[in-house]
Length: 483
Image (cartoon, rainbow, N blue to C red; front, side, top):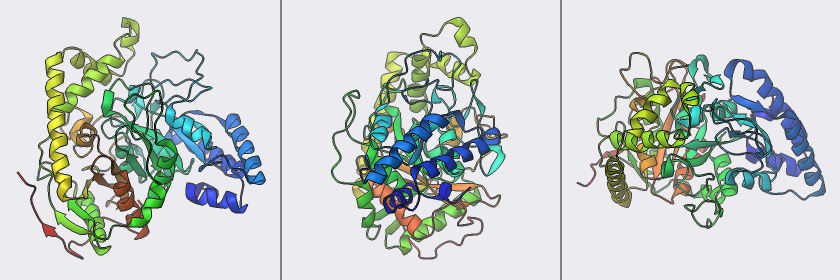
């Protein structure tokens, strides 16, 4: 990567303001990097070279006049090919969607970025309709991990995470219905935030309903806060979106973590088997939070695995998104997607409502949990990146991607904000992610914890080796959730 492609969005805006470099220079370097890495990593469905350079030239003119359009004017951004970007097709990883069409509308998050002067580099890869936790599709093939090309980048926002990790723009838009921002962020060593549901408006509505969130994948927590300041807030097209934000997420980072009540759950009460390299890297980072003045206790949230309820909702969504496809179109679907859509089509309304009941109870339990603790910290995933082109790790015995993502999908059910923070690498040099979860509407706390870890030098995929990290450097207490 060049020096310019390594800079954060916050630093780019500062440089534009000072005249140190121009949006055209930065965009050209990002596009060259995209072309360089695409043949091996396959992070892009489409690279929009000429439109991006035209946007960069417009941004350069605004900065020269001292009239930037907004908070991210001239900053390169990529968009997952689930979200609409006017001027080109959104194919969602599927051969069942025709490229022909007007394609004249931006998704709300894309529209906000455009209003603030962002430069759109292209569309990033996704599994078909974003249905699974790895990124491969009948349309675009396999997306690979920047740290090891034989391994997966994760998913379903795998192309977005790989692009950020490789310096192809510091900002990326992803979606997260069961971990699809946090999973690839953890596997690729970047920061990924799933905001509170509705904080970032979504249109068209997802077939997976209110499980699906829109969120940033970025170089660090400060960039995610900057991006969230831009893309959050109401949009008339989203009936379930939240109202205006009070204050700035970027400004709130200064609050730090001193005095925060942090619950650390290493395995959700013994429910999850976590790889040793993951466990030690996460524990080391948690000790770092204690050293920064947080009150850390070992405490597990009060719930069992809600995977059956999640499957009911998720499989129903898969049936809905493919409902109008004919026999010829169904024949070219990802075989795994075809399996779960058939299972979803067999579910009854009563089974769906029973899953909603589980969801509501889980939300109640987490609401009570956060009366005691400001944030919950867990591993983002129990494993590091495994072989590319498969849904589950070889020899794991798992049937579906949810088998190896037990830390992520529960918090789509509850609609809470959650982020994956890179906290080093395992013994094989693969990134490890730490998950931070807060109560609904407390996105600021998630971002503050992530920012504090970066500030302390604990966060960053290459900055810490989790293997062999010692336990108890500062020490923390053990407590149990209320029944």
